[in-house]
Image 1 (cartoon, rainbow, N blue to C red):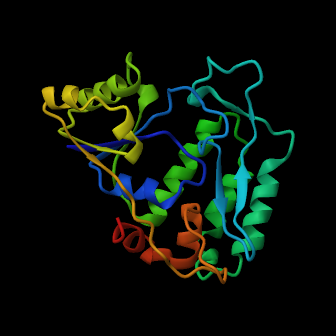
Image 2: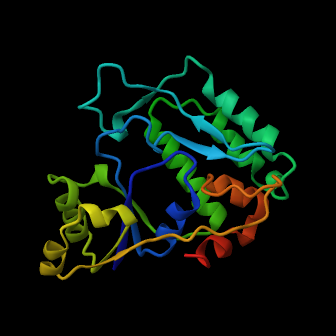
Image 3: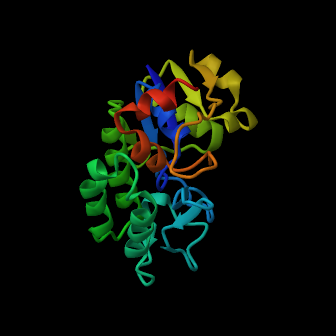
Length: 229
């Protein structure tokens, strides 16, 4: 049993899905504290000139320090959904595979969400289906977890009967390897090698949302993102 663990993300990047594809189970870490200016509620898409950062506005005033990701509420004052969808239309309507994904994606931007986590769940499902990734998904908020940091990761591995944990590269900075080995859990670090692929922009822009890849390459997207890791 190989598992990976990552916080939920808005319009996640390619490496996010490569790690999921390489796992037997992926755990979405949605019960931990929400971090301001993180990729949980923002990411970049491409444009003719420079990448554009899209951010889902959230209500956080007076709540930091006691704001788990799965409790974060969206702030709808700015009509962000209309703005984001208009930006996507403007920059991807001429992409080769835009018509294939347009209707399903548009439904997400027309649906009224209260919780950020519900939006991220629907987007994750959409992208996994588009990439044809079949890895089962489990949400940490559904588990009875007590630990934090490295011990939290170990606790999740034990609860899911994992034999191997696929960590992000920053795990090297905080994971207590000895504790994992004591529990017969091996670890590898996912150092993702971002691929180049054809885009609508003249200059290649890397580290964009997975949206850019699937709009340009459709069914070939999984092969492109997986063969370069």
